[in-house]
Image 1 (tube, one colour):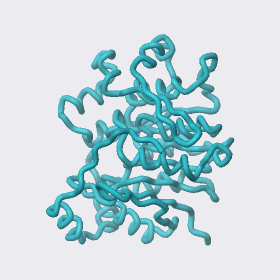
Image 2 (cartoon, one colour):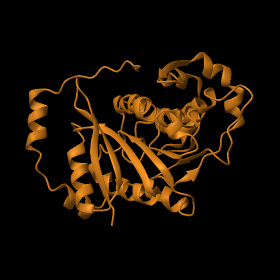
Image 3 (cartoon, one colour):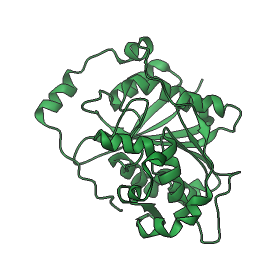
Image 4 (cartoon, one colour):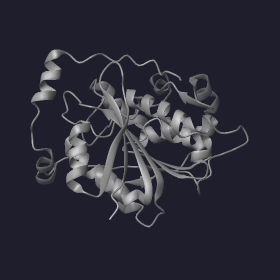
Length: 296
């Protein structure tokens, strides 16, 4: 077992009351409401030579954690950003200036490692050791720092990484993966790919690609207006007998999303079935869902 040293507060009585009183018709809201947020186009992001040139800098600002038999190395992202020009990290910089982890259509919190990512890494280390991931096709959807996909990569999987923000991929995700490669190895662009942008635009861009055996996603259901889009993306990218592991909080105070909501959407949509495979025992309520296609 390992820890990322997150501080998780228990919800207040007022927050618990908000959760219990939230009786909105989630499915109708997501189906009927059209968002006026203009989302980023999707594109493939190629690793640049600048990453290799700065690898010593990344190493000096990195740390290691052990998950089962797998060691993960990743950048302490709050420190590394000071070495880059604001123009190359414009979305992350704008979020920091606004003191926000979420700016709709601009930034989706990818520069941080969130609590549920820790949960899912721990779950993977206990239930998906190297022999279960070897040669599997894995998608880290909404990857942020990429530690879920890097765990799978270090177990021998073929991994694609997707995040909304291009600068997160370029300045954090790709360097993190490089830190986990042997010294004489570079990223194989035929096997490992990185995509930025809106989920549905990503599925359109990659519609002719092979589908994935396993999709890993963490903290991606906080916005109820995007839950249908997420479900459509999962449907487009998952193989017929594949599985999805989704880690999230039971309820996201302040933004409205939550697992009970998403489970209701899954039931109404009818393409998938889900079950809870892990539940937090302390702090803010968090769970992991295993999602598979419904058998026709």
